[in-house]
Length: 359
Ligand SMILES: Cc1ncc(COP(=O)(O)O)c(C=O)c1O
Image (cartoon, rainbow, N blue to C red; front, top):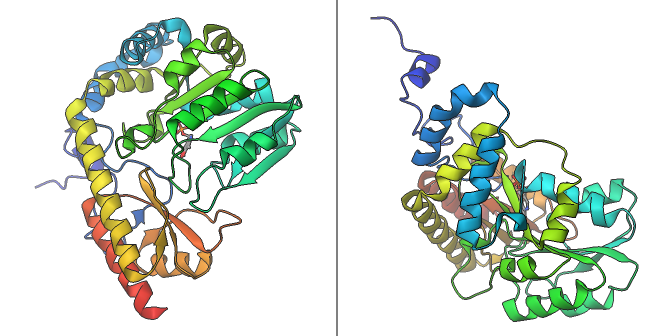
């Protein structure tokens, strides 16, 4: 019988539904828990859309862009003019920095997601990074004291990466309203659909009606489309036009169609959410029981203080074939680890127990 290789299996569609990191029974396989991806994605409807769209790859995706914009407008209850679609929310972060960070200072939390900040720094911006508060959440009152007319952009990541903490919705809405009068406030909501209900709210409705507030979302997390590069911005039409004028790349057709299909895949999305929230809870409780100190994370990752340096924890996890997030200065005694498959969670729970015994 001829041997069946991976390419043949892929052609037969037999590997298509296999989670990227599911082959953990191989002793050499790694649990890739460093980049907050979704190990189950893309979902079934997105996979089907990708297969059905391959032939369109020879054409520019204007129709696909219009179709996704329309679906998002329906979902978000806004008109198309309130939306910009980018090649990942990363592209939109760069566009926002180009538009609002070049000419003034940038105020953000520390630590927070670094993509906009690093890019703004390269553009010549001065960064005012305000330490998180005792709960490892954005300190909005302290940030407010740094904002004056010299600030071009304020970056809020809610839930925050790497801590996963959220800010109170009313306090954030007041903050946005006040500071959008003099700067652009970018609210990055990459993980907003993974929060525990009632803990915070999206700023999308406020952004749609108020100039100078931009809400960013991504298909890279719950939708499991990180490699297909689709994200979007919600804002006032004038603000969205300014952002769009700096777009660098036309989004790719397979990603656009996969994202549109994924929006309909409520079974897949709610299953992912349930699994992520349950594993997150299990990991945080386990860490607490061991005497480690996890932040109150609402993302698809945990952020844990172990009392050891990041490199000690990373080497220990590597012995268990687990890859963890990078260090986040100045919180170098913490480690960020993404939520993976059930098998990976079991491995991680065991690795934490083992770490406790060794330390
Ligand atoms: C808070 C936050 N924003 C934005 C991104 C970028 O996502 P993407 O460019 O894949 O949409 C990430 C990725 O990890 C993130 O954690």
